[in-house]
Image 1 (cartoon, helix red, strand yellow):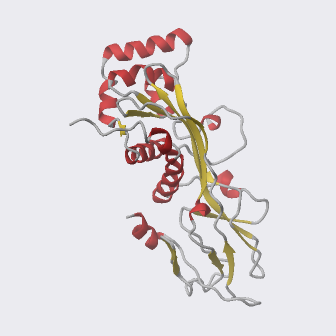
Image 2: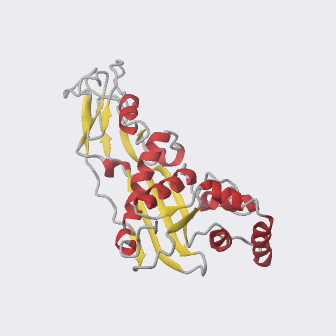
Image 3: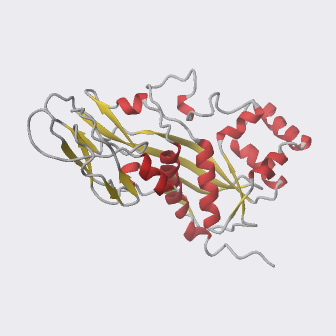
Length: 310
């Protein structure tokens, strides 16, 4: 579904090289090398293989956590920071972790079981007692109370996630004549997570990963700019550039959602002002980032994961 729907929603291009008004130029953007996930951990017993996946959004149910669940921790209202347009996208990140943990042979807890546990007055009272004792509530507190109640020996805690445009242009247009410089900025995802035992709170694995949309390019991509951008529409791996000739000399082709175009100087306009709002592009990049992170767990759980008894 992603490949086919993306193909018809992405702008496209034409390419001709020359000088003077009305020309169309092309700038090549090269695939970027994917980051190697940073992780720590060793082989561990997966217990009953059931995994509870939690994000900071869950803390809001108890009156704690982020004031704005759509924003990463250091971008919360009232926290001084440089203006950026990152979003947290916790729901997509949690879904991606559940999908990839399932592929790993583990069993993510269904969201209905999680919601059902929050209707247990005794469990809720214990969670609130923890919060009142310290004046705060953490994801480990929730894992310690909810995990055993729903039979999950492990909990995957999303400590931080952020989705936005990088200030690392994959292509820079310095023409045609009369047009301001234009930079093609890739979408980026950064995720930080930890896996703990719900019975003890012990950390068995910790990892973080960062993915740029340009990491996902299968080959160098030509980004055309100019009035005749439709002549070189073509597929790039799973993606396809499609577009139109509109006669606009400075019109620029980009992958919808996966890239953002900014004009003039200084650099960083996409990062500061453009929140990523293309759900398919967001999900596609998040899935790649989370998948790369979860894959580092495979050698740690492979020997421990056994088929359920019949």
